[in-house]
Length: 497
Length: 141
Image 1 (cartoon, rainbow over the protein chains, first blue to last red):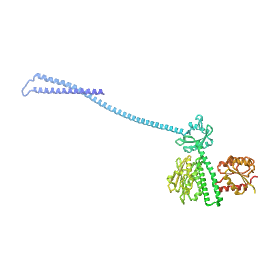
Image 2 (cartoon, each protein chain N blue to C red; image 1 turned 90 degrees about the vertical axis):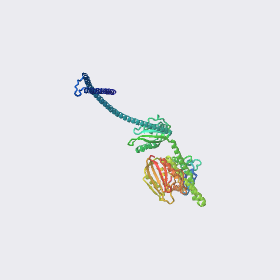
Image 3 (cartoon, each protein chain N blue to C red; image 1 turned 135 degrees about the horizontal axis):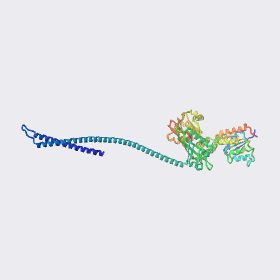
Image 4 (cartoon, chains in turn cyan, purple; image 1 turned 45 degrees about the vertical axis):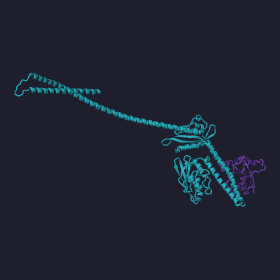
């Protein structure tokens, strides 16, 4: 390129020199011609004088003419050279233009390629960035997972929970060390671990029920089950286990694939609970005995010696008997309350609430009739619950709705149910005297009463018992009430109670 | 009129009094003997001191919750002893637990009655019991 340019410039320079020389020669020729012309004019004869032209002058003119001829020859030579230079220069210019065009074209191509490249690079950079981001996020998620897992492990250790994992497809089971520790073994000692491992240690009486619950959970896709059973400890005694399992992975069709669960030793809880129930049961039985004596002999006194007693004495007897009767009712309810929390509530079973409510309606027929009460029952579900306690809840709530009415009012009770995902929700609505907002929590406390026994009689245990039963069924109970417009009592029962 | 002898095995003085009054009201039972715990009941049947002079009863009213030997043990003793197993044993108790009821019948109790809480009801039950076992039923002799 530079050489080309140099060559071109040198050519141009030489061309200019030749041009200049041509100019100079032409000027010289012109000068020679005009000089010769002037000389000839001067020599030409003027008028009639005939004058001889000197030879010297002719020689000068001849010289000039031959110089001119020489110059003309040189000029024609130079002009030929000039033509060549012009040709070369044109070629040079053409080449220059070509090369410039080529350069421009080349550069455009280069630019295009670069542009494309940079685009590609940009895209790559973005991809890389995205990749990095993804990796970073992934690692964050992973970190979170690890942290979560650590936390879970701490919790599991803290709660002394044994865990198991069951691949439902392959049947592969794994337990952790705590699982074995619960029954006094090491994980090593209970090898091999397979689906029969549990059967080796679980109480045969409880196993059937547990298996039923697990297969129900898998069949109904409820995702969760809870069972309690006994397992034989290495020392030979029985350990009460609370087993809770959850489907943690399902196929796209909803078939359960993986189940994870915990075992918790609830022997102590179970014993304490049973102890308490037994205590309440024994205490109330033992208390009922002396009470029966008091009321029996008071009645005999009243019956056999009434004539010998004055009005005041008979009044004393009345109060004593009234007290004894109330206490008797209270003991009865205390017993119900104790049983509501204990194992005596019986096993859960499938209950058609429509039938249950019909039974209760028949049972409470007298009371409903007497108050001319209206009892509307909506469509109710079939649920899994303990029959006797559930019946007691409905009986108590209907009883309350009938009892807490303004004098002379005609009770109207409505019972409905709805599906609340994990739970069934029931509501008992009445047109009674309602409950003030500040009392809506305390009414669930044991022995809590809002009215004197002259206004509305009661032991203060009805709702406390209901609450205990509902909580046993994994549910909640609460009150929505508009004072004067009645009460809406709502409770839930877990679907897999 | 036949002479009926009842053995009442009961530790609660109040119940003894109530049952005695109820039986006396029926005027069908002539003799009521009392044993205040399980061991006394067996001693009474076995004529051990201080019951050397006792006569075998025609009917036994037996409580479940008794000191020393409980009602089930006494029942088992009676029903596995040839000399006494013909005597009808009526379980009369406050317990209404299925365990007590089933155990009693498994040990050949002749009937099981839960004491009514109401005193009038209690009187009525005892009178019916008396009428049934004295007037309707033919007892072994």
